[in-house]
Image (cartoon, rainbow, N blue to C red; front, side, top):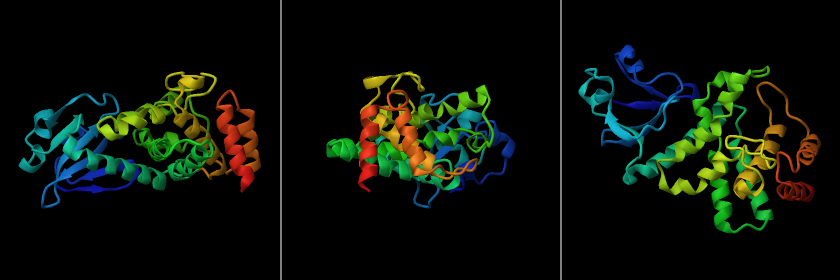
Length: 272
């Protein structure tokens, strides 16, 4: 069985004969990530996140999950929900960065590359050590991978979101952190990713953290992400001017953003 990467709307397209049986297991917006191949370049292990129950723990193969007689090759594919064996964690981590790049290419509302650049500049300007800067850079690149679980029509909706739709959008930081769960080396940045939409005042999401309860890396990514979002073109609106974006950062000091982080961002912009 070969698995081919496609676009963000159908992250993995699997060659299969029985669509109905397959749909019993994997439905729209679940994520299938190939993490191990054999010598013939066939996928033999998948990591799966179910949008309703993820991760559920354990390991099965497709035949056990469905009770259906797939071909031998398909039935014997190992499906990892969590955890992944240490020997293949490195492949999974690489797959997450590929996922982040795919989201950036296919969804113009996502801009992890630009966010990472600004986050590194802020962290360095604040005098953080090299290890902290490295962690912030990695977290900024992966902070929006949870959007792969969010229906794309919500990400690009031109009008206001309903309360139910907004609740779905607000889940993506948690989804992003969950995607990192199987990889030990990513555990150090999970809190940064999970908390990048927390507000300094405590009115953010998903956990309602405030002030110093929010990791400094997350506070930095929050400012970098907001600035990058405002000056970037979106499907549903044109970008704002840099001056207007700066004014918005200033307006939200102490409420949405850490005032100290904003001050460092403003200093960086003044030096250009």
